[in-house]
Image (cartoon, rainbow, N blue to C red):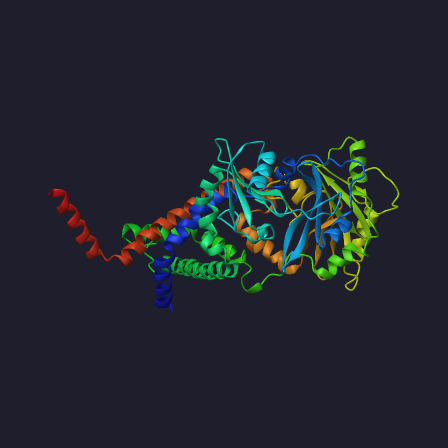
Length: 503
């Protein structure tokens, strides 16, 4: 048994030593510099206020019908001086964003380079200096942007190297990056996630590469831990059985860093949901239909909702339609706030409200999984173990992890978190996803509640343990080099170097 463990650990170490070194170093960078994205707060702040003239606008359904589109999402915003509906519509089996004039229902053509540059300049209030069309690059390679492809990359003037990515179909900015962000991500997210475009553009292949590399890494860490403890007790006269410098310190560093090295590698594997061991956190379509309720009747002119919001001193930048328990609402948002106005034709006029009435949300939750039974429902004014914000001070928290929310839990362990302010289900958890919460999020990011409450303790743990892991990896790389390049070869190379220096 020991010979098998030594063989596995030795040769897996030779292959993966550099991988481990890169993972630890890049993990420190990624912890402080996330992958580029355009947050909701930043996106909304860059949009112009909604300006709807008298006589405008068609509802999303009417506009889509005139344009000959079917849609799953609709947002009312500005396209230059014109109010438009941005519709997510099927196109050849893949949903794509298209833009329709809100006043006439005319389908607008895709943006060209000049229009994309103008959209980026209006968003950033800077001058566009270069525009390129691309299908994907390192910062737009994830599938989340597939409905916007191809994209225009627009470089803006300024010392920070700002580049904006514009969707020609939606006519809006969908991602931004800056020079420092790109630099640090080449040292952080890209190597840590094995994320080069040449591989990541093939999602299934990338998934398999990461999963099987992580499985091999788990075996390396596990065999190292077993051998380290085993060797510790082999010689009763000396705790550390090795006399050679690098072997001795590899053993010592392994004993100190082995547990968290193993848990970090294992939890990284769990992030990929290997072989589908965890269920999805998404809401099944049957439950989503129950949440929405019966189809809402014809919707009122959205311009009326905008004017009503303005009459109360609000300045919305975007409007979309949400539905819960058969009620349709217009949601109006700016960078910091959102409001709801009833959307059905003939609905009683009312002032904008901050949230859907409690009775409506509770009724929707009660009927969500009626085949299982009635859930236990309570309002959360603070985060719990499943629903939490890793960076509670971020301006995007109000969009991604708002409070308060309603939590409904059924007897089979399924829990749903619903946001009354946006009339949406934000998270669905079952016993499987609760395990994923611990085995991936908890072990990999140390985002347990006590550590989130003391961020500097969490920072210190992550950085300190990562530095210990780096020390272990440095010893591993030296030993792997000595396996690959025998001592005789190293001595010959050294003698040649000395001889050349004497000439």
